[in-house]
Image 1 (cartoon, rainbow, N blue to C red):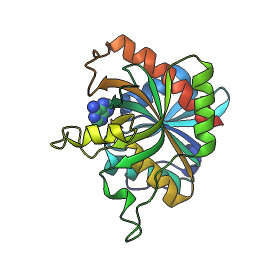
Image 2 (image 1 turned 180 degrees about the vertical axis):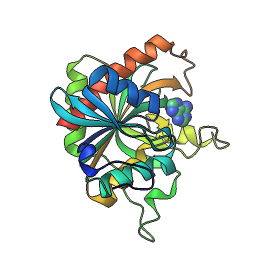
Image 3 (image 1 turned 45 degrees about the horizontal axis):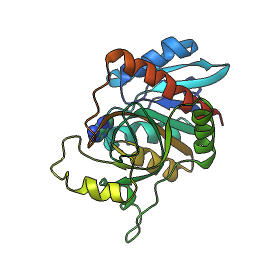
Length: 236
Ligand code: ADE
């Protein structure tokens, strides 16, 4: 069996999926955190790695960047491969002064400029939210690890380079913690498929406070920590 973007048998994909944006991160998850990981699909360089994490079968597979790319993979995983839970493990730009570079944001909802919240039902804007059980599992883990973790809405933008930066202060006033480009798409795909999703994000830059960029080493360490929060969400 193959879908247009995934080429493997249904049994090759685990029911729990870790989904970073970057294919190299999916491979790194496989090499550093999985036992017995094998590459089961590699269409367009988006590797799907299946193995076990602490004895539990998991697949790591990247989303690529933005809602259109993520929604292709998430839809095929949920609807063709029977995946139950997908956890996005990615980064966001800080919007709220309450969050700082290096903090973890768990997206308890996702506002968006993408059409995913309005296209399914004319006249209705869908609430795009994660699985409660996954959210609780991730938050319990992050709090117990002593990391600075924030739970709240994020803004899923269709643009990394936006001409409408004027909306960012308004999003801040509405309590939005950060900006990224995939969470709302993931939550919409889960809603359509009747399955579960969560986004766990490390703050990699901040739109207002000018706090410095992360070094390559810091990125890896912080990613590894946020990954554990995502794994806790998947297993909850
Ligand atoms: N992901 C990480 N930082 C971001 C930013 N500033 N804008 C959009 N997506 C991001």
